[in-house]
Length: 417
Image (cartoon, rainbow, N blue to C red):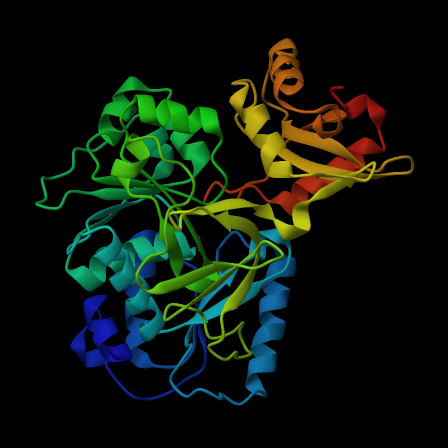
């Protein structure tokens, strides 16, 4: 498949197809239908295409402007490749754009379909299309002749659950853990989710209690692992495996090679791998991620957390994801971020931040903490954060939370404990 065949599959009118190169196009429309039309046209018309978000700050837009100026003086070293630039890391305060093209995207779709034994993907879209998870949900449908139906998450959360037409191969949907947690509170929403062929869960670690509730409701969950740099999923647990009690992130998809080095760092190779961070290029060597993991005897990946997120307190290492899972599992804190704050005595202390609108029963939180975490791993402070900072995917801006926590820690009156 070449670029112009992809454009036709995305719905671009034949009259737009051209070989002409042009100035880079930035697409940032939050309306899914307009975004899809714009991307189909830009794919057909040639040149670099950059995906962005309308919610980006002035700082993030300034960073993008700098990258575009660098591109103006950087010769393309791989003609016709890496033309689609997908943002990764923008909400953390540092904009990076992973280069993809029709070859990397088609490889990702092909491996996905073979792994899950599906030839026509029909998907409900609840994630923004400039994000790799939302984009790939649409592309899987477009490249297999299926239907993609974008829906408004706020309406779904409010209980407006549309009936989906019957399809021979059913429907799939992608959710982040906080979305699943909210839907599980509503029996009608649970019944709606039970009608899907597969529910893909990603974007953040899912805590054990959430997965237990999903299993009890017999939801066909697939836990996976993927990055913008890999065009989304490169491992995936099949729903049948999940319902039989398996957890973790599943085995590698056919198009990917997933390895864990002696230092515990996950690396990924394969045909869906990005071609560099715009405006630069990289060769096709495997990509060392910033994540730690392990492979079990069946070749299933277990993601253990970010390599750079480890908190060292009193000489002991603490994995924030482990503490977050315990706090969420208490049932009192649906959203929480755990981080290390500099401390003169301990080096760092473990601090948990949570939305100020939450009203946890602290006795239940402390019961979960003391029963499941060693003393060194228990948060020393809980900090409420007003206007909990999330992006339009519902993913928390950890860098902004950290900034606010640092400010709050200088004012002890703002700490819950």
